[in-house]
Length: 243
Image (cartoon, rainbow, N blue to C red; front, side):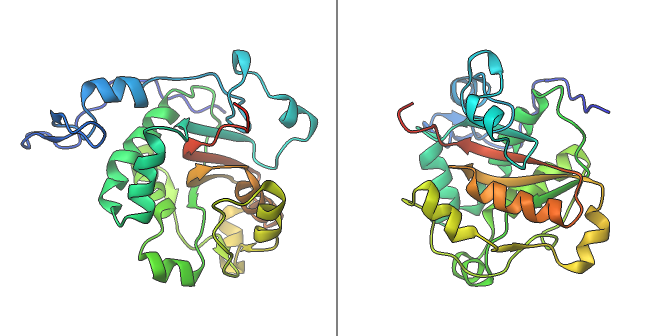
């Protein structure tokens, strides 16, 4: 069974409100992104590998995924992790601006609308933070995105079906091998969530996919707990080195 969401212009998030500066260029508009920035950075599309979302000619599976398929079935990304998304994500994630979540969730939902062949997802879950990291930041940016996108698409979401067992060092600046060691055995599905996920397709939401190591660790934990398949939905995908 396939999930069909025909692309359509989205209504402004702030109908009837006074104009506000565009979050990217500060031009006054009513929708958070001005028309030009929306067209250039949100509505624009690029051909990507359907499994890892790296750019791929013709939108075909890339060589790496064909040779060693990741445990997640599909990845949807709004854009590359480059200007202006790197700055916008940093504001949302590190500079205490959770109020950007609604606007960013709209952009992610719009990217999902363009994926007409995306299989149905039954649950939407955030990539979890450890309790220490959550206390430090005050919110899980992935959950702020996940719950809003789920609400828009009429899907169920919960923040407690996938947990991070232990705190791990920041992934920023780490290579693939170090990232893999960093998250090994760090994810866990608690027993009380397993019956809800059993045989279901899970959408895993995060702000950025860098190497795919965190998504793979989370996906493997979900599959081990009985999920049928895992999709990954992210705002931005870090290009491969050299791209």
